[in-house]
Image (cartoon, rainbow, N blue to C red; front, side):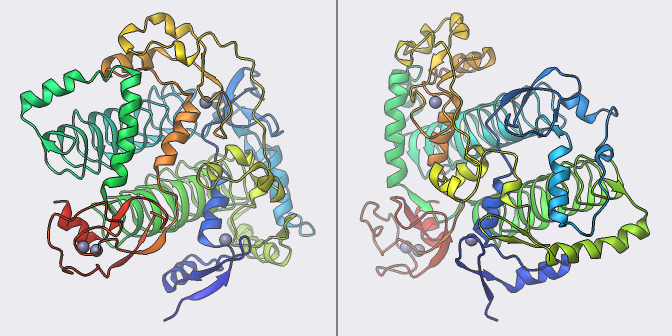
Length: 591
Ligand SMILES: [Zn+2]
Ligand SMILES: [Zn+2]
Ligand SMILES: [Zn+2]
Ligand SMILES: [Zn+2]
């Protein structure tokens, strides 16, 4: 059966609605979407800002708090203690559903006045500067971190401890600058590598110990630049490398980048995963056009999903969720969500809800805790609720919300992007799909210029000791200027401090101090990652070598001397330098 096609309301590109998509829409009783999968993803991502933090007064106890909400958002913000207390409740802001006014406008009004939680976090111990961090302890300036301890300056981290400056990692300890890697220990600068110990600068390696500046290794020890050494040779050679010096690390980083370009890459990074299309998927099955998925099943068009099943169009969802559709930052053992943001703690059967916790059968509610049968924060009987919902659903389609770009939002759409409380340029959407200031404003989204910071820089990067061994504790008092001096487009904070736990980590791991602020470091790592997009491409193996001639095959492939005919969906765009092979050709080379 040929899939149905639609034209995206937002980007005007044609997109497919497959029969599996249709079956899901039918199962959960929603109309087909009018935005393409990528625009839907970007729309959800506009509702999350992981890195920008502001000081603000709690609307209830008036203490100064750290929050992810910018001062431009006029909605009151409560500190964690006040928000969860019974000194107030979302029901205090209840609105009577008015049949003469668009439901969308009523929901917008309710969202504008109901107090928000300072940080979108849950069940942490001592993580006051880590937004979107859950079930974690002693984490600092890190986002999307779950079940972790002492993780700093990182993102998309699960079940890890003592890791710094890493992204998309799981089950790792004592790691630094790890990207898209799993189950590593005491290792630095690993890229798409798993189960490695005491190793540095590895690309696509598995189960290695004491390996250095190498690629495509399996079950190896004492490998230096892809050459086998004896234990003594290896130890002597590594001892000569002064890894504790920044000047040395800087050179090695450059070499590492060139190794990535000469390595053979499997078209996708699927680990212990079956029947799936996407990238960075671990221990999952039946995942379709999704990214950064772990321990999940039957997920479509999604990104950053943990232990969740039977869901579509979800971002930053899990653990323990099922039957979610069009949700962002939601779920902690929850089910049957449609069009929700920032809800968790065992909610079921909720729609168009925002910041609701442990609720059931709530529609268009904001900031409610443990309530049942509520609409616009007002309580109804079960019977009233069930008869009113179909009328509201119909009215949402009859009187759509129309934004300044003439995009129409009916029942079945996620919240309009303009409903986001965050500046678009600090949102996750900007991290993954950057837009210029002009384009952002033209599209009608909120752009917030970097606030002028009056930091008195006490130490320039050139004055930081090259060797970590020459750094004294007095560094903790310094305000260090970021080497980007705010000139980049990466939320550069222009200055940064080194905190005590961080210094202890560098010393223990024998690593020099960084020269960039945490945001600039984050963007440097993001550049190493592929975009959340897929391209249909052909295997680049042409028989004896790669198409660009850079890589010579070491074994004879099934397709002999002629080019491999296999095609696939990959997040490596056609203009990238990496050599991308199909599963069979890759397996023939990397055993
Ligand atoms: Zn689109
Ligand atoms: Zn910076
Ligand atoms: Zn091939
Ligand atoms: Zn081949």
